Image (cartoon, rainbow, N blue to C red; front, side, top):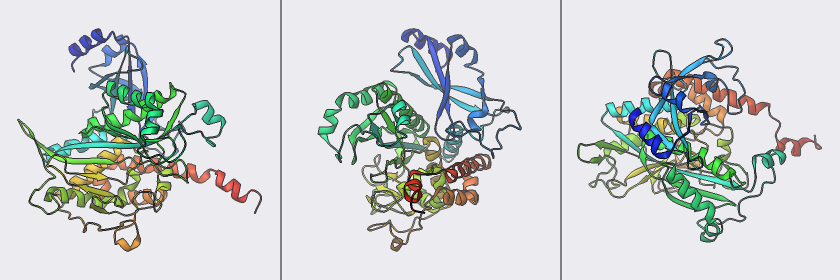
Length: 454
């Protein structure tokens, strides 16, 4: 939308304030309110935004190893551009417009720490090869009868779930919480995040949503905004939500699966490229090469898909999380599930990822690895015919800690080739910081195990 169209939309919706923001390396939306006068003055040329958003972690603690910014640079402003195409009106603040930012360097090039710019660069590479990427995201998340204050006062222990018991696909639980369910469906639709399906999963107070498919960038915007919007929607009802990969050792984790396919954009219609009706498994050669790249690079790219220390608590046998770099047809023990259907519905479901992903980084990495497979004619290993999670499966094991995964990423020349030296260097430094913060912590498990016994 240009300025003229935006002014008309603002007048029609009686917009009196604007909220702008961009996502950091951890997927946290950093932003602020601006007045209409300020907004119109920076719409075309952008504005300065303190680059500390790339110099601290999700808890606002400054990194001690970052190169993109720091005490040595004085944490100056970086340049931020408003993406007018992301215009939304906040359903819970109906006179407030919302826009996303892209962060750039003084010469206009992408900021190396900006996740949205990373995805844009990978999409541009796909376009140069003649492909358009379509993605859909599924999120699982747990909801609690807790507020931010009660979470803190309880020390995040003994939390009361929205509903008790293990009720997957439960009409009863969905009906008992129908006001919340309809609020999720209706408010997300009004926020341009259409939900195809919403249901309970196995666990107390756990739900899953499937966000309707879209092109890669718009899907990443929607997935990232969904998590932010859910936290606000729940807070207004005295509830809290978590997208942690594994919040409780005794309960299933929360997945964040990525469905994807490539298309050719035609003048009159789009042509799906992953389907081959003559193939036994209905997968085209292009799809197999794309799949081959993802499987081959999966271990060394795991830190990008599984960004937190907690991500790896989900990687345990028997809870639906993949443990190997594997794939199979309609096989949910694999890291990638090939789904055959009509030409437009044939796709790959990337199952390694959890709900704690930064959607921009995870989608960019998936797409980049797939394109690498196409460009290098990489064939996937034979599809798994049974349980792909054990050592006997023959598939390469996935790293089981963030430290191990980050070491593989740091040593990966192919990661730098497909995602850029600047981004990978910064990301590796942030994950090293994350690991070191955890290694300094004294956990509840240690206190219970050692306090009286050693």
